[in-house]
Length: 467
Image (cartoon, rainbow, N blue to C red; front, side, top):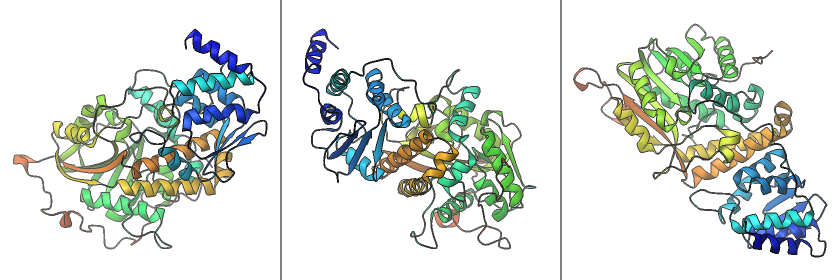
């Protein structure tokens, strides 16, 4: 900031004392726009804005300004929010929808960080006399070391996100403990909710893979075992599930035992690059490829190709971003610091291209973008309904991270800023033989064991894995 601007700011700071809310008003206008209806409550009890405003902000501590002063970007605001220095009240989805009107339509809700905003932050901090050393980052912030996408760093990134606690995730995800897009092939109602939609997703993947009794399958990034346990019980397959999370692995093993399929389900803590006991008849990768990274997509695709038998199918279910040049990697983003460290989203074309380069033939692509918006809204509702227990099981900061990222993601899928696609590919056999059905109707035909339980349970184990 130039010396001239600093002089102007210091002169303004010497004006008559004002309430914290009055001092903050120009900052709110600079960050959210002058026409945004917002109710602001500050740590001294002062307030501005209509009481019924759809956006309710509470600044509980001067640390909020200090954080944004030292990190005048998304990271500063994220740290203040996670630490509880800034609270977003009321209906979060409504508030974020309002912010969409003032943010870049390509990137969705957010506080505008520009020269005017930075000047307003400095002015407010000087007037309130709170300029000082930066507060420590919240403990929930990821601190990774090592080479990006190396095996050791990948394990740390996965642990940061998934080793929050199985009880916490059960509150959010529901009984199925499936942490990927559900499939709402029926209207929501008393007989069909999130759990049924997650089971429908697992069944959809099974049918696309053509699972049959006696097949040996691999689930890359198996999570808490929802898919492998349902596939083993309902389709009679032998399944290997791999994850980098020890907590997930413990839970999935317990689930297999209690579900009566432990003799057909093996759960490993293993990197996909270390699997060497192919070949498999089919491979599922559901919500895992987002962690691979663009530079590793060729390795990922080639490894899975090598693990498949000729004629074997791969179902790759992954979030995608819109086409175009990728955003410059930023370690100051909320998602990278608090949600998915080192996560990378690629356009659908990049995934399809990597699979084809590895030798796969892509046979079917289905977008289920709207399904993920419904899934995320259900997760947000679960978290908010169990808020006190979620905080007890983790931390208030962690619960705030999950609430903000899931609500924001729901709007991103609704607004077509994010997509999610199921790509079905096959490793061709001799002379290009695929063994695939000639029509999509035949591809999706029911092939489950007729003598098994008609509505299999993939609910959470009745005994906590840590007990």
